[in-house]
Image (cartoon, rainbow, N blue to C red; front, top):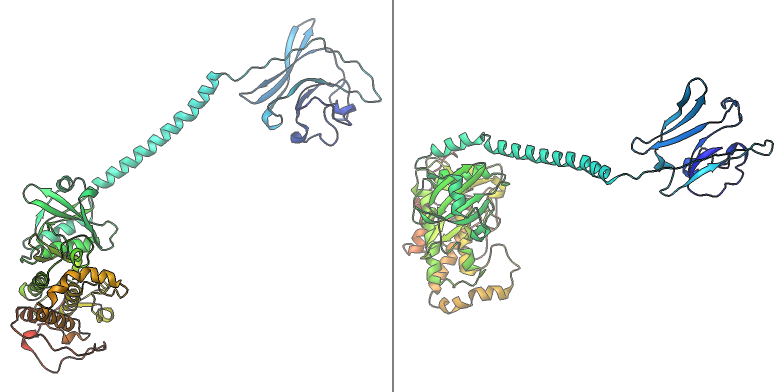
Length: 499
C-alpha cells in the first residue's frame, strides 16, 4: 500500500502486484511521465533488497515542507515499556513542482497481485495543507527588491564618484597648453568655464550660430565685451588641441582690421573654448549662395569684400614678424561685420614660418577644404603662400559667380536665382568684373610659380597695375612645376624654414 499524490485518479494498466496500482513497468522511474509522488508501506518482501517483512500495526505521518522542499515520513509506535515513540524513517529533498502539476489527487493505492491475498485497513486518515501566506510572499519580494536596489544604487554611486574624480583629475595636457599660450606674446584673455557657460546659456542650442569642421559656435554675452561668439572645439576632433593652440598663438598676437579679433580662450575640464568678437552678419557664404532670405550683395560690395580679404592675406604673408599661412581660406571663413566689412577668421589650420628662408610648411596630413586646395598640395603635402593664393582665387570665383567650387551639378535655376538681381549691374561694372575674373584665374594657375603674390593682387584691385596676362586655355598641371623665365621683384618671396 502507498500514500500517493497523483496527477489523475485513473488506474494505470498492468499496475498490479509490486506496482501497487500506481505505475507499471513502462512508467516506473520516469517521473515526468508518471506524474506521481508516493510513500510505500510494504506488507511483504517483493524482491531481494526489500526490507524485512515483519510488520506490525502502526501510525504513519508523511510531511512535506514547501519552504525547505523536503519530504519526510515517521512512524508512531506504541510500546508497553517506553510508551509512544515517533520515529523518522524517511527524509529526502524533493521539489514537488518537478513531478506534479498544480492540481493533484491525494489518497491511497494498494495491490497484492494474483498469487497473494491480504486485507488492508486504513482506520482513519486526514490530509492537511497550508497556503504560502501573504506575509511570506512579501518577505520574498523584500529579499529580492532590497538587494537589487542596493546594487543599483552602489553602481550609480561608483559611477558618479569616478566621474567626479575624472573631472577633478588634472589634465596632463593642461600645463603644456598653458605654457604654449602664455609663452606667446600678446596672449589673449583667459576665461573661466563657468563664465562662458553663463554667457552662452550653458551652450543653449538657441544660441547656436553655426558649426564647422572643428567645433560649434555660440552667441554669448559678456559684460565687458557685450556680444561675443564662443567656439566650442569638438571633443571628437582628432586634432582639437593642436587646432586650439594654433588659433590662440597665431591670431591671438595678430591685429588687423580685416582679421576676426580673438578676445580670449578657456581650457578647463577638457573643454576647449575660443572667444571672438561677434560678427552680426555671420559668414559670406550665406549671402553669395542664397542659403537664406538675405539681401543680395552688390558688385561694389563684393569687390570691397574681396579687397578686404586680400588685405588680410597680404598682412599675414608680408606684414607679420613671422609669415602666417592660413591654409583654409573659403567663403564660410570670411565673416562680415555690421557694415559688411570682410574679416578673415578660423585660424585652426594656420601655421607660421620664418620670413628669412623657404616659405613652406610640411604636414603629415593634408590640411584644407576640398575645392580650395592647390593641386600641388596633394603631391607635396606642403602649405605655401602660393597655396593660400590659389584658395583666394577660388574664393574670388565664388563671389563673382555665386557657385560653390567643384559643384558642376548645381541646378541652373538656383544659379540664376542667386544672380538675377546682379544682372542689371553687370553692364555698369563690366570692367571691374573682368579684372576680378582675370585675377581669380591668375591666382588659380596650376603652376604655383605663375601665381601673383597678394601684394600684386592688392595693386591690381586698387587699379595701380594691370591684371596679369592669363592663357586663353587652362594650362595642364605638371610637376615639378617650371619656374618662370623672368624675375619680378614685386613677387619675389623670401624663403624660410617651418616653425
